[in-house]
Length: 160
Image 1 (cartoon, rainbow, N blue to C red):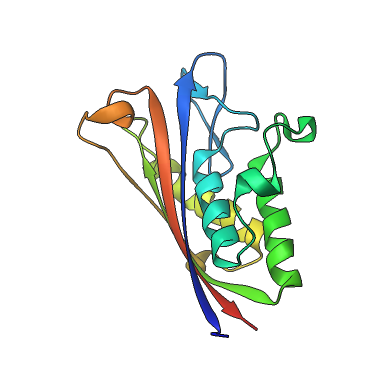
Image 2 (cartoon, rainbow, N blue to C red):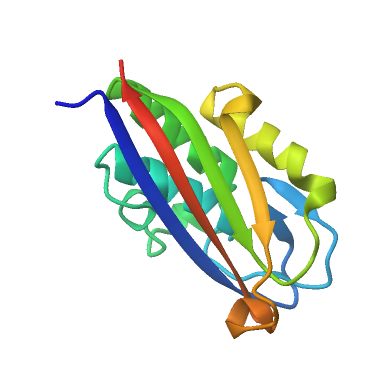
């Protein structure tokens, strides 16, 4: 078995009124938030999906089904900590995480470092191993018109 494993994750959530906007575990002041069974942290969900894929754990829907009431309103960073524990149990170490938020607004530059710190802490790695970036879609599609946000992540794991 190879010692290196790559995983790719993708997540999307609709924007709606009456919800907090949480990205990378950071509550961002915004007039609308993401709709979901948990806190709908689309960035953290994409990272979890990439990690679970690389370790052949399935996906976050398998690990934390939205039909299970115990995950209603769940803190996604807590779920990420659980994924990290599963990785360690299986002998995997996170080499790096590269994640991209796809949203027209708000700008995340003021929050990027805290997002990286939160994700790294939940994974038990150094912040230098986690990169968060963002892009708009130039007004195109559901992310461009402001009706939703998406995120993608790529991770590299090493079997210890």
